[in-house]
Length: 222
Image 1 (tube, one colour):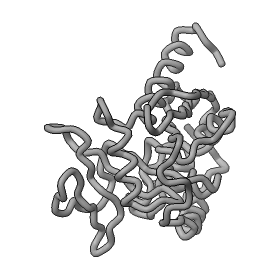
Image 2 (image 1 turned 60 degrees about the vertical axis):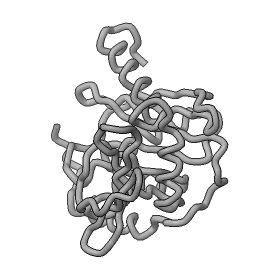
Image 3 (image 1 turned 180 degrees about the vertical axis):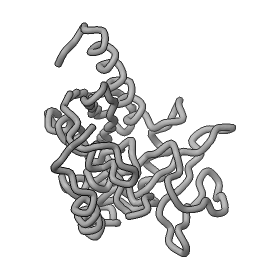
């Protein structure tokens, strides 16, 4: 996909500036009453983004929204947030009420430039976010402490490997924006009752995937 207006150099500069604005402290009601989940699926040059809100205590779904938008940026490793944030924002804006914090199916601070899509989204919208990733993008896993282990880049802790279930590989949790790593880990563990993935992320993935399938089958077009 060719996008003439896209400049890697400008995107990198913007990324580094946004990374400096990430707030690494708990700046939301703790414990939260509601938690959101955001995920994106793709159909050719279109993105299908889903935003889901669940009750923190019961994990029951309160609200869902879906948005289908044309992809505006190419796929460039370490700059994926520029591709994914626009569809995520589009889905979030359709929610009637924002949750206390969002879990994003993306990296947060656990990123070579300290700004994955979870942090990018949080800073742009000024909302609390947690990065939840299935793969380790950078850094090395330190000594395990019960059900989690710090992830280091040199001497800096940039995230955590979190084992949400026995005998499964960890997921990778990091600060997105306006949250501490300690709280991000706690919320992650508290929202993983039955499955490996946190329920807000799991529900967002199900919603986006279902919408993608329906669109591909021609059942739904918007």
